[in-house]
Image 1: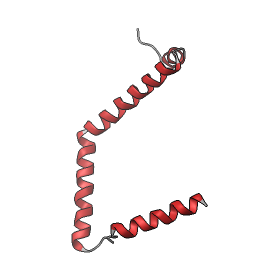
Image 2: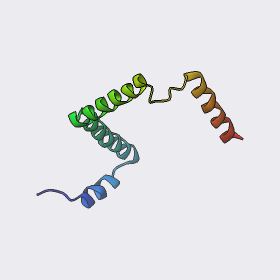
Image 3: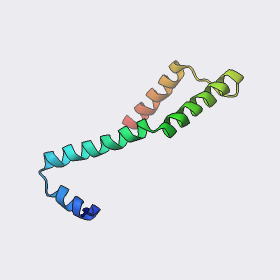
Length: 82
């Protein structure tokens, strides 16, 4: 007999806070691992990288120097702090 999601949640909520945190971390890590191990996801990212590189090589993409990006990010952070 399997346990329902609701029953599992109720049992998990009965754990001590540190145990719930550990369980949550392990569950999240299991999702991250499965996402990164997915061949479909790896292929999709590989295709995306190739597409972007092709756009750069062909001159269809605007390439922004790191110094400019860094300066713009610094300005955004400064504005948020004000």
